[in-house]
Amino acid sequence: MKIKLSPAAGYRGYQRIGENITKGIPDMHEAIDCYREITPGMYGALGRVIEGVNQWPHDPPYIKALMEEYISFCTDLSRKIVRGIALALGGSADEFEGERAGDAFWVLRVIGYPGVSNTNGQNAPENDIGCGAHTDYGLVTLVNQDDGITALQVRNQSGEWISAPPIPGTFVCNIGDMLKIWSNGIYDSTLHRVINSSPKYRVCVAYFYEPNFRCCSGASRCL
Image (tube, rainbow, N blue to C red; front, side):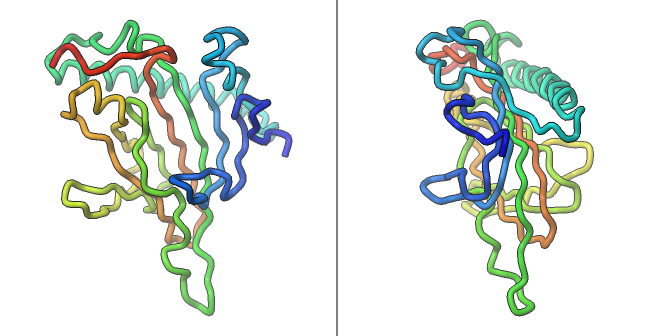
């Protein structure tokens, strides 16, 4: 695999099924991971491990330009969402900008989940977990799901797992751990998991909008 994820590639590139680990358990998905590109020395020793450029497949030839345009769109949309949340919390629209998220870091994962295989005519129980239960560590996550395949589940306040089916033309927006901290818990992190019980291969593109790379900020002043 020419674009295999590795330390030498700044942890960018392709992961095989089972190589991503959530809470010690391999996830049943494959993915291409990319990050905001970091030039050598940009963040000193702190950023050295993820310095590098993103790796894209050579086929189709337009995928790099297409995904960079998509990332730009998601960055702009996420910034607008976070500005709206700042207003809803009683602060100014730019409350979370500047040294907090004015130069936001981001991560994007293109994820593929195998469908359930049949064993003696019956589906294997709940497949394996496509992605184990977790919260995202950043501000907000935009999840773009395959139409027609419901696999994303979110745990509600009663502790029940509920499905988040895809709605054409929309994103699911998850709240991350940093936004929970900055809002003093008013916005809670979204605990979620993925179980693909469909026989079809499922594709999901998840865009993670993060604070500035060097941000060390605590709870929001506006609360």
